Amino acid sequence: MILPMCKTTYRTPRKTRFRVFIEVLLTLAFTALYPCFAESKAMMINDNSTIVCFGDSLTYGHGADSATESWPALLQKRVKIPVINSGRNEDTTADGLMRFDEDVLAHNPAVVIFDFGGNDLFYPKKKLSRKQIEANFRTMIDKLDRSKTQVYIMRFYNNQMRFLDMFGSFDRMLKRLEKDYGVTIIWDAWRGAWGHKDCKFDMSHCNAKGYKIMEQNIFNVLEPFLKENDLLR
Image (cartoon, rainbow, N blue to C red; front, side):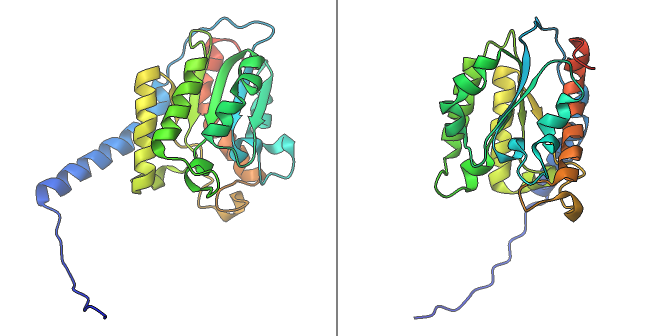
């Protein structure tokens, strides 16, 4: 039996539309200005200190022509201490948690840059709930001595996608982590690369040109901390 289709017209109440409009404006302003408010603090840096870039294929550099064109490799050219690329293709936060001690803590990190979420949400064999993802992030952050480590979390999607429900909920999770732990969110590492075919390897990864743009966006957020701690070359 085929039921007839009914066309339903729904209009958002004027007050609700106005409130949404204001929230969008505030979000845009906050996101655009956020790097200016990123916390900068002095750390105890020693000869063994490192910057650990910890994540999935976007950190590993999938789609670049060589390992030297990943964004962690490009970041290494700017700083005095070793930059460790602990990115691994197809990893989720659950995978990251399993290798956290060996691939992060063992490197005496002064800075940790997290990059997870894409595989957690979209890789069918490894898909996790948002509750699990947040719990994994919290467990990893709890393992760090934040008095000795500056923590960043890189959002894996571009800024315009935050209006989709699944990404909006991910944003809300990031804001909870920001509030609860004082971590710094890298809100738009894709700025200038997303939507540009000459910067993309595929739908989810940059090519060498795109990673160069991404590294600049990441560096812009890290720069106050790097200057404060005399880590720039």
